[in-house]
Amino acid sequence: MQFEVWAKGLATLSVDCIVLGVFEEGELPEETHGIDSASNGYLKKLLARGDFSGRTGETLLLAEVPGIEASRALLTGLGAKKSFGRKSWRRSLGAAMTAISKTRIASIAVAIDRPPPKDLDDYYFGRAIAEIVGSTLYRVNDLKTTKKPKAAPLQKVLAGPVRKAGVEAAERGLEHGQAVSSAVSLQRDLANLPANVCTPIYLADQARALAKQYTSLRVQVLDEAAIKKEKMGCLLAVSQGSAQPPRFIVLEHRVGGRGAKDDSPPVVLIGKGVTFDTGGISLKDPPGMDEMKFDMSGAAAVLASMSLVAKLRLPMRVIGLVGAVENMPSSRAVKPGDIATSAAGLTVEILNTDAEGRLVLCDALHYSRRFNPAIVVDIATLTGACVVALGHHHSGAMGNDEDLVHELVEAGMRADDRAWQLPLTDEYADQLKSNFADFANVGGREGGAITAAAFLSKFTKGLKWAHLDVAGTAYQGGAQKGSTGRPTPLLADFLIRRAGL
Ligand code: BES
Ligand code: MN
Ligand code: ZN
Image (cartoon, rainbow, N blue to C red):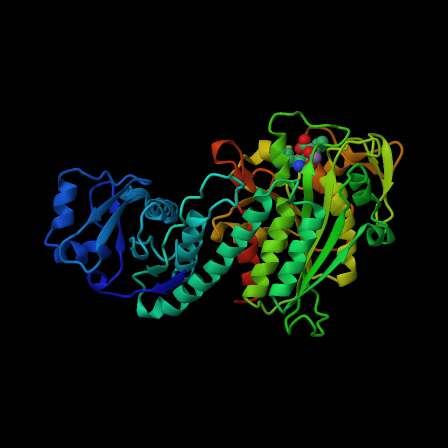
């Protein structure tokens, strides 16, 4: 896909289609006025007849609009003028792209009027265009044997209008947006795979493939024996019931390339890579259990983010860690009441084998210490309780460093991939008391998303750490079942900012 900005002369752009926004009031925003006069009032007449409502989500494809170079024009509703903002702009662009993806249109000029710059500046304008184009054209890598519908032929997208002073920022936005979009697609591809394909070994192979693709990345994969040497007793307790052996993945981006010396304190990202979560002996209910193939979404987001860091050559050391395991019941599986010893040396009474994510993460968090990290962020589909608390709109954000949590929440707002902070205060840890070990792996139903984070916080003393619970945001159920690619846009924004780009 080719992305460029356009500045003026919309009527003379030779593309297959120009995309115009129309308000519910039947008004054409400023920038499309040129088209109306070029076409001798054609659009005004059409709107006066009431053929287009202008509601967000609604589109109308017009052929042979007089007076313009493009062979088609697509109208997309902007909703009511008074409530127009970044959100409705994004929705109308999404609707337009969906309509275009169903046609043979190969080149477009996006000319949807934009909300004011404080709501959407030139950089984020470019980013949003590339990201929305990418996500609407994304197709699930399904295993259907029926013939696949042809991919949309769209090849070229012109974004504008952009004033001269904003061209550089918009172009940078388009470039970054494409990187975010391919990272999001990578996450979605990995997470959408069935668990019989996407095993811990498969995830490790994907990390190796990334290190082959990008010269800044070096990869190290710990097999079961190496994981035992690291004394990751909690991760191994989860894995022991499965015929699939575990893997621990270390993927590092170095500024001067993979061979360069770089001892700077890195950003460490840790992903929960439970390739399938049956719950183990504390078996889950059958309805919806298939969705537990998405329980490696955190791991997929980490691999995706590493690909973005490498693609954009961010001038910053970043390390991705993934604990990849399958959580199964079997005669060898860990049982409620079993006690495991974590790599940190703390003992954990595993009262519920379905609270396995925190067991994998605690050993990964401990592993991160050897890198003397600047900050550590873990990403995990950790708790159903987080979905109860926040639904599917916000990821849960917690941590032991307020500045870091705020930095993540703000990145989420800019990237339209929002997170909301939950209060991780000391009291919650009381719920994890155990009579037999240093603590238990569950703390009862109340405040479940927070007690899970409180468990992790036991392993992060002295680290600047934040935790993103993406159980409600990383995938969708129902008719649209599939990975969303979240929170990769948030992480991308966070990393790009931190790198100062
Ligand atoms: N992977 C699940 C969390 C989850 C639930 C993700 C729903 C997405 C949707 C996690 O391993 C889990 O099972 N958590 C338990 C914890 C409980 C036993 C304390 C849960 O949320 O029920
Ligand atoms: Mn579980
Ligand atoms: Zn899980």
